[in-house]
Image 1 (tube, helix red, strand yellow):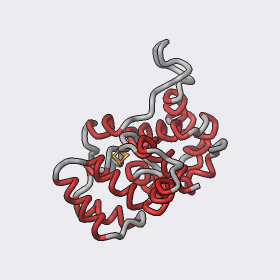
Image 2: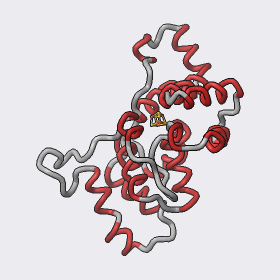
Image 3: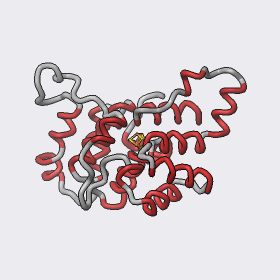
Length: 204
Ligand code: SF4
């Protein structure tokens, strides 16, 4: 994947896992995201290869109603901090924070009203989760039923992998049939950045 710029995120978001698609859609709907959502999303974007400069452009453009002054004073620092450009202990300087794994996202406190961070398989009610999945193109009844059962057993990442497999069914069959991917290339996904990378590779 060549250099990603801020303008590519809308298109690339089709390959994002549900947690990040939810953050992206909430950001587009409200032109804003609360702190933990911004942090979760910023680190994910960093993980897919968005540079600090492009990440700042992405957030600046996304907060459509905000003045430059407010953005620079209250928001820019946190983005630079996540990338390790400012602050942090000597360990983190220059590197910043690591993109969150599913385990980290799944064990965080649940989002409160107006917050969109976390894993939707865990944080959404059954009905809202089905609605969200349908909005991102998962209409298949069998998959939606499977997700409901996984969620009931609190097997959230299993639900996520089920959705991945459905959304990439044709592509997975092809790489398996022609032997270009081994079984390890198709291991259970336990990190949102792996979800994106695998999705992107399969679709291109
Ligand atoms: Fe995101 Fe992981 Fe939840 Fe999937 S299981 S939606 S990648 S946090």
